[in-house]
Image (cartoon, rainbow, N blue to C red):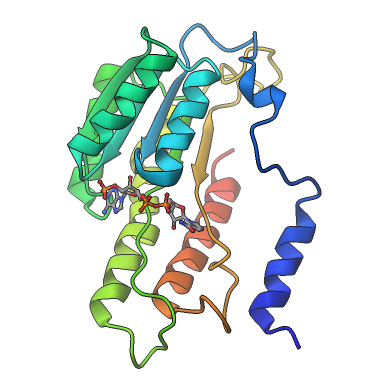
Length: 224
Ligand SMILES: NC(=O)c1ccc[n+]([C@@H]2O[C@H](COP(=O)([O-])OP(=O)(O)OC[C@H]3O[C@@H](n4cnc5c(N)ncnc54)[C@H](OP(=O)(O)O)[C@@H]3O)[C@@H](O)[C@H]2O)c1
């Protein structure tokens, strides 16, 4: 019999009608209605998903990108890959621990300075998980602290400091993507968010991702 988590996972899969495992044409062919400047900010700008996201947006025609994380050398490696796609893209690399209020604030200052206080997409990709397969008694308090710090607090800091640069005057009905109605705030979630039992039900990660998901729901409700 399926656990609650397996049922939740199935419900989430059913919610998304079409699943893609490889990039489809709409992702590979740049849209022709992007604004002249289109800037992406990725917190957690390297690693499996971070590099893939940065490459996809570069392929799609982004003109500027901010890559932030704690490891500058790894961000440089992502930047090299982006320049092979578009040698003209403006890349700004920022050392930033997303669990630090002051570091994210400083990163936002850099973004404002380098991109004239205008962003089109902010992606919170940074994530922390300690070992899986544990229960609350076995989990270390420092894993819980790190998960909440990176996954939950970090998402709040990013929303707090960067959303003002996504907001636009306008109706949101224009053809010029991102020029009206504001940009996009995206957090990379996980099946952990609705998970409470069975495989992958390590509380520090699941609770922090559930809180992150609620935070993003509230961003949607709060920001018109
Ligand atoms: N891998 C999976 O199976 C899976 C499944 C579901 C969801 N996710 C989620 O997908 C996202 C990416 O996962 P991934 O597997 O691609 O992870 P990954 O390869 O380990 O990369 C994690 C990224 O987050 C950054 N990061 C970690 N801690 C950070 C901090 N304190 N401050 C700033 N940046 C930080 C890392 O950079 P630095 O280390 O340089 O800081 C790196 O760029 C995460 O949010 C994760 O929870 C992953």
